[in-house]
Image (cartoon, rainbow, N blue to C red; front, top):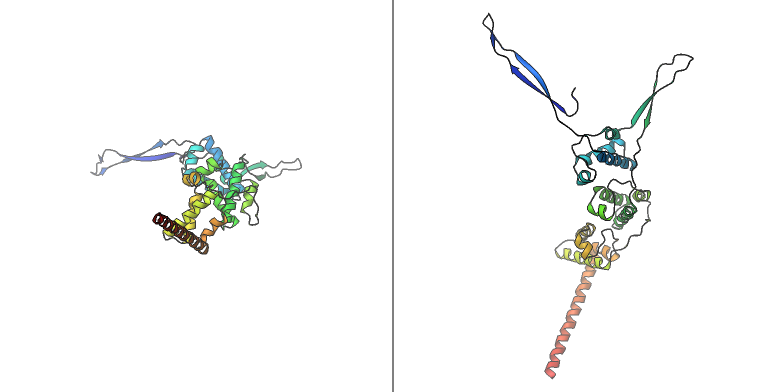
Length: 309
C-alpha cells in the first residue's frame, strides 16, 4: 500500500543469456521496483477555514453533511476566482483532516467503567458530536439588498420560493455587484430575516424597497418600444429590458439611473401586456400626429403673414 501522493514504477532488466550442457538457452529477468515521490501540498489555513465555513453554512440551510461537503468540494475544485484569490485555495491541494471530517459526523469512543461486583465485559459507547465553526452572519447591507431582491422578484410574478432561490444563487455566485455594492460575503450565514423570505407566507419585508426612478422608467419604456419595433413580442421585449436593468451594467446604472434592485412601477410592469403596449403606442402615435398638425398650421400662418406684408 502506497501513501497518498506516491506512484510506483516497475522496470524489467534482462540478464545475459546462458547456455546449459543440454544446449538450451535460458534467459532470466530481474524486476526492480522504484518509487517516485510527487509532492502534494495541503490546503492552506485560509482555505481550510473557508471550506469549513462553507460546509456549516450549507448545513444551516438544511442540507445533510454529505451534500454540503459535495457542494463545497466542487466549488473549491472548480478553481473559481473567489476561492483562488480570497480563500487562497489551490484547486489541486490536498484536504486536511478537518476538511475531510466535514463529510460525516465525528464519533468519539469512551469505555464503560467496571465495578467491583464483578468483571463487566468491556463495552464501547459511541457518541456523535458535531463541530461548530464560528461563521459570521451576512452584513446588514447584504440583508437589505437580499430582501429587496426577493421583493423585486415577487413583484415580477415569481413565487416566494423561486425568488429566494434566485437571490440566494446570486449571493453565492460571488458576482462583483453583490460583493462590492451589497457587501455580501459569498460564504456568509443567512440571517433569520433572509431565511424567512423563502416562506410562502412572507408578505412583508424589513427594509423598504424604493421604486425605480422616473429616468429609469422612461429609459425602460423606450427600451421596450425599440425592441417591439425590431419585431419582438411585448413579453419578449419586457424580458430583454428587465434583464438589462437587473444586470447592473454601467450604462443602466450611471446614465439611466436604474438601481438593479429597484421595484418596477405600474407603467413599467404594464409593458409586458400587449394591450397596454398597444394603447401606449396608439397614444404616442396620436400625440405625434397632433404635434405634426400643429406645426403645419404654424407654417401656413407664417406664409400668410409674409404674403400680407
